[in-house]
Image (cartoon, rainbow, N blue to C red):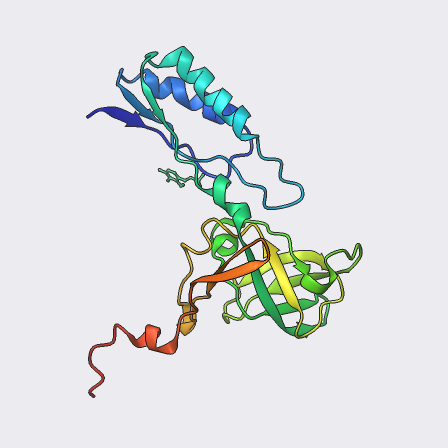
Length: 220
Ligand SMILES: Cc1ncc(COP(=O)(O)O)c(C=O)c1O
């Protein structure tokens, strides 16, 4: 045993809980290593104001200076805060159904983004051709997975969504790819890296053959 580890949670938008997590762990025993976990929040919505990395580190290191041995090694596990904003998911609008609520259905959903169903994570979205539109109607964006929980974004303003539009949902770089799944026989989506005007396929779209690849016996 060379150290202690603490992880207080994820998508934390305040530095205080990080600072407060150090003393109780340090009081348990002195070790050469303290792993202070992950948890720093990412900016998913216009309203999210995650702490700056410097402020997060100041809080952790400040608390560590106070409570753990001066020569102890500190480890952190930043994940979401580094990657969430690195990806945007593109969907095709496949249905617009008007009623007391306008539902905009897209060709993806909980198969590529489980964060909404599992954590109630809120996302923003915009129609790719009309990113600058300032007004729009209130709609609910839903997926194609045939589950009542397959809601991507409830009550968001979109500029005149029509069948065939591309819908961009930013901040999908964390947990979406790693939790992608084959719900209802869905094939997982590809990943494309884009930089300086060029695009590179890094994960190909899943095929029907992929879905059947583990079947070893088709005899009746
Ligand atoms: C032990 C541990 N370390 C790190 C993380 C990653 O945290 P984050 O969601 O901030 O990337 C998690 C996720 O909850 C975790 O359980």
